Length: 100
Image 1: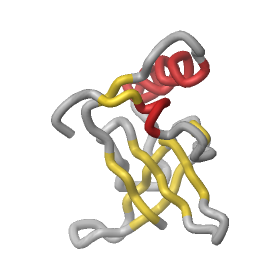
Image 2: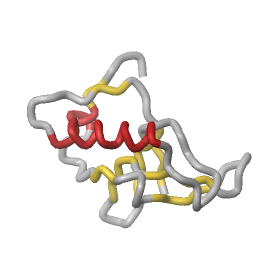
Image 3: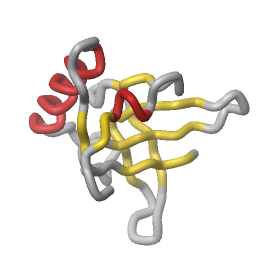
Image 4: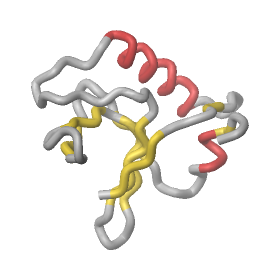
């Protein structure tokens, strides 16, 4: 994106759920790695069961049992505060969206 967007405003009324990277993970594949793991993110499920995952850290893990970094846990905890705040905006200038 060319400028910061208020993530809370963009996702308003989408039913998104902020997921803890320490307890939530999804496996997917691409051309370079047969197994990648997204830990946490924002999950939005459609009525037909399809899932969109907005990955916010820019990191993914290649092994299922890899530990989430302290940096990612700190970002999640900061994001929880912004997500739950009624008075604060949550601005980001990039994120990845995966559709499953």
